[in-house]
Image (cartoon, rainbow over the protein chains, first blue to last red):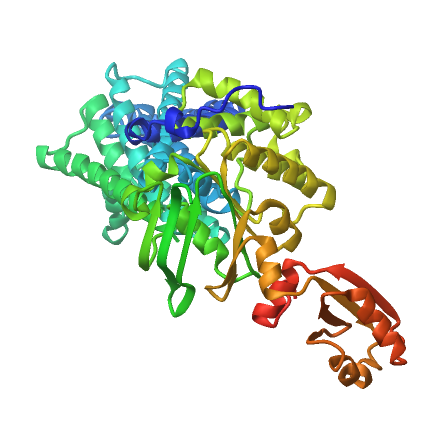
Length: 279
Length: 308
């Protein structure tokens, strides 16, 4: 009941220089701890998602396509080989989205935990980076799980298939960073979720050259691919896994666009976190 | 006066056209228990957020632990324990996890935090709930946990914004007891409240705020002495008769406040004033003699009651 230990005082205990250097890691540690409460659900989704896709789209649709196009293949390869980098990138984007948008709304609004973090030596920038780091962690293991399931299904034809892992992670984190910034500005999340599902995620998935080359689309729909990290990651992934033809210039364009989405997302997120916390 | 931990001069905060804090001056010394008293909207929480180094001032000078919060926010926050008005615990985590992660935010070593958490669980009387999710705790338990959490880094200054608002009387008394122990250990407390009894119980010295300004400053007893009388006689005649007797009552004492349901008569001796009223032939339906409180001080200073 009584305070048994002798009070040392924060002047003795707390080293604010240490927090300045490692603060974002403390935030990530706390986020991952929360994530662990849902770990079985997260693993379940990470397994169920690829299994369902591989059965329906890969085996069902893929079988039909492979049959009709014959040895020429889609882009010169089996349909599953063509599809795999896109599915990996899509899984990365979904994982990153869940681990940036929900925690950000929760931290500012539902639980207001970001305000409690900000009453310690942690800054808004560190909180923003910490949330992102935890999302990065989730993205990495989601992609690894997905990849493992694809491998187990024999869906990975190309020996270089694993090279789609880094491009998928880059796409996921770039998209996650942008969504984190957006979530930091949200006052009304209900409308946002409707818009996000129907007008952002769905078109992104369908019009990013996921199931067919973007060039098969009418020109006026191709811009969706251009603003979509999914398309850029898919193109890079296809190049790396089976040698899909891309000019060196376009390789750089895809890569730099993804990196700039990531940088802009992180910058905006850090700024908006700081601004909202100081309100 | 001992070393000043917090010093404000001309402290000002505006939200658009609204001046929430209007050029106030105050100092808080080491080991002192300092209160900000005032109704909702007086600017107390805004002052707290500026002292908490999370909200920037618009004008004036503010020094906390010898530093400027605009320039050294994290270094100042390293030595503060903050209990916000609205609980912001992580509701998905358990009691011990909440304490643990908060300790980590201060960069405290894991082993230290682990042993500290045990001590704080006992302090907050949450031993039986230690592994329960915060979601399942009562309001009073959450409040005690929030206070315990603020102590994980053994802060130099503990800041409590409306610590007992929304709690039942028993939970309030438990909290007061906990806070009193901290005060005995030499922790500097800064407390906002709109409860008079809380201010009288916990504060060595306080400022009375209204509309962003300081109306008065002093210890609870000196404020009562300066702005009120020793005793207050409360009399009720029933709403229909109040108007009739008002003038007669006014003639009997120096200061009288007319509230919708009763008169407050300020006097050095309540009993003899009551006798005087009976002697004049007036018969109040109810009467009560009590000591002056900070509520009376506030009424005197602003012409309004604290909780309307």
